[in-house]
Image 1 (cartoon, rainbow, N blue to C red):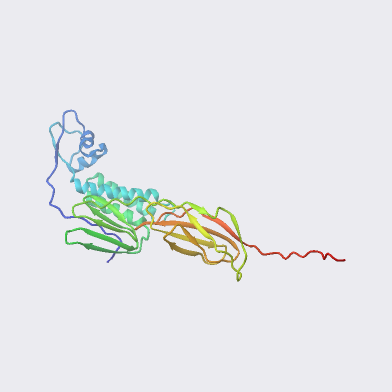
Image 2 (tube, rainbow, N blue to C red; image 1 turned 180 degrees about the horizontal axis):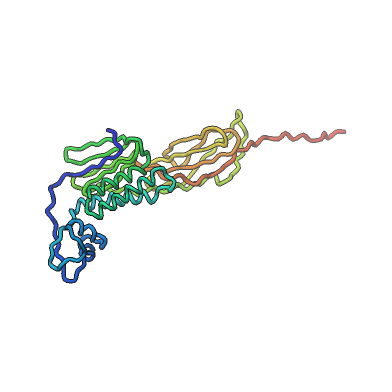
Length: 297
């Protein structure tokens, strides 16, 4: 199954209409703060109840927004706001995404929550990694109604259940229990701390068939890591890459020269940022032939 965006929703009965009664000397902003937790929600109440001003007589019954629709729109807006805020100002689609976000904000203020969620989703999708490429993912539903979403490649897929939305990144699998929100993302893995060789260390070896070594790279363990991805970059030529289960890797014998190396921690479905680079240098340690003056004259 391939798609740029996927929303998982649970079907439920249409919720009953929610009403609130305006208290004495209570402004529309105060009603919004009391019922929605945000005084700026007055514009939503005004649109939802077709009011022409914020002046509302005490005892007036006002309709409140559907909780799930509003929560869904808010979740989409928060995701889109974060994507726009973090995007590079030179990003190709940032302006287009910003326009979509403004459109979503306007729909939200006018209590059109479905249009707000759709526009916010579009803004997020414009700035998602791999935009323009379809996502490759699988969805499996168990007999008990639990749903498992696995993403293989492409942009993250967004899963929504019980008014909670979370992205599922490539290489990640999320299981959503029936009637429950998606589980929160696991905390990010720590960046590995390198141990040895030390920065700039010069390592001397007697050459064997023109190669030097072996050198053992070591780093501190990262909680939650299952494996580690190591990259070693020579001054010239392709880098060496290896995934290892331990906190060290013995390199094969290498030519003399300088090398930079980094390590990433790998979890069940996570990858940490790369460690700070370190440099080491391999130097030939040749045995010098000492020739002294003869003892006889």
